Image (cartoon, rainbow, N blue to C red; front, top):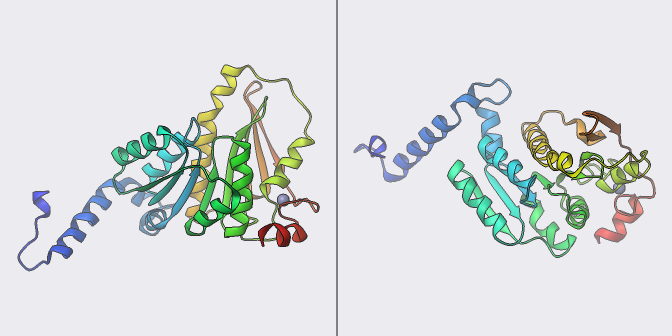
Length: 256
Ligand SMILES: [Zn+2]
């Protein structure tokens, strides 16, 4: 960019920094004006690393929203070409975002090795195995966890801070609460299909709120959206004393 060419007194490094700062200010000018974000918030987003588990119909809009907002580094966990396509779309959308494409972890221990650098991990695409792996891994790595998935009748969103707070419920505790919910008739598949985007966009909003140190209701609740009735429930979630993942005796056994 010629207008950024170094003036004689400037070193090449200083000139490159000015170019980067200008690009940063131009790209995020609207967000920088928002009282809820501002310069400090934008830097928090830029310094953050978020792991996105699953790059399908929920993980893709989620990652694109995070990249657009300026989350600095995204770990995209998925197999095949899907994660590579998403990484390429993110580079087109916001070249200031660094993406790392990773295959899905083979075990929770493998996932735990990846998470210590992350502020938030997200099980985005409803795969139960990956959700369970990330639940254990987030506790081991001391990382916050968000998840979105579908039941036959509802879209579900939940979060766990058990990785930072031993008294907090984990995702497995949340799933136990759902087991005791009354069974409703399954929604037609086309209706449920439309909730994928909803899951991705709510996960993105909650992630950004967490990174900006704003309150996240999901840590004490589970959100259920019923598309057939077009209504939602916010269920309180408490720690399950016999949880095989996060109860104090289980933590010692499973995380050692
Ligand atoms: Zn638990």
